[in-house]
Length: 445
Ligand code: NDP
Image (cartoon, rainbow, N blue to C red; front, side):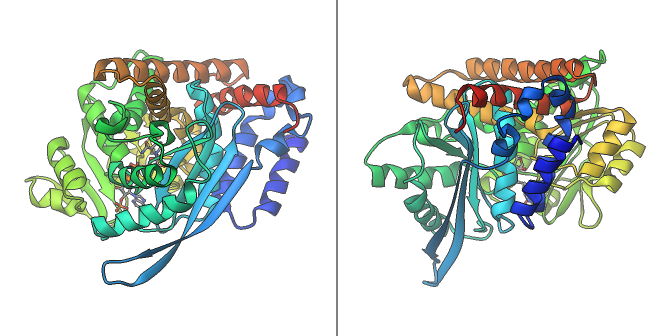
């Protein structure tokens, strides 16, 4: 790293002690900026780098709620409004016991550049809580969501900050939160949350968008080599929103996904994942991956090791951060994997990314590959603002066009800064310059 960039990184580490995921995300972006700043030194002037790594606003709040047995629980809520240069803060809410300020900050920081890549006029933010929805009744989840929104509502709005879902937050949670927002504000601001139900302002394709986008990104990367997903064996991690629709799009494009996972283990189904059964188990019954194996002859559940032990041509990490380390990357490469497209946020550790890049395989980083979700959220906002609704084909065509543009922007930036085919550099450089140019135009704010 150049001295000027290194100093900014050291300050981030000193100021945000113990927030290792945030340090990791900042390091990856700053490292990519060396050739950008060498070519355009003005990006390091006016403390622009120091400003971009500092959230505009961080909100942390108490979320008290009562369980079905009458016991009171206290969780912690977060919203990081990181950067509004390009538009209202936009980014999901994560409900998972591992959530803390550092996790939300890393996600918010990534979101700035991802959202810039979509070219949809959205700033970067992220939020959530250490609440664990697993095993909670609908009534408990509703009371938690209502308490969470009772505080969050004073900070958000259709032109201010527009949250969406993430791990542990799907249509049910967005519904409970929207209901509470509307009640407190006495205002049907459909554009205040995205990922809404279709009957109350949601967009077709939003549910599918992140998983579909990650697969479309893999297809675009393969196309640069004159190849495609047709006939490829695909290893998928996760069994939530992103994983399910990555599997669906991969199947539509002629590939065969053979795995998925949750925190209880992974499933190998050599015949190809039975998508309807997986949706039934995960979306309808909110069950575990073992429930799939019980009903699917030939599928096996593995509770030790890692899903990356299974050989395949393409890997789609769609669960969580740092789920794919250096050893797993080496195993994937030995198994013949030639493409990795990140559905999750920062699922590959720095060692894994280095191994993929050294091996010269196609590697699509999450901030580009999984941007389809937030891009379609922006399309949902656009439909809400126009009080209109597009059909599935129209929304999907827009998503496909946006993913192709993101891919091409990454390719062009990687070439411009002298590392053709480096999608990490391409995504970081293209996203950064779009935000930085506007921050410069807005003056020192
Ligand atoms: P879901 O909650 O729908 O699914 C998450 C899946 O990953 C579940 O199968 C879950 O298993 C598993 N998982 C989560 N944490 C862990 C963990 N610590 N160890 C093992 N397995 C884990 O979330 P999404 O599918 O929405 O999100 C998945 C990833 O995609 C996240 O990184 C998210 O930030 C990213 N993403 C999501 C977007 C979206 O539109 N939803 C947009 C862009 C990125 P279990 O149920 O057992 O915990």
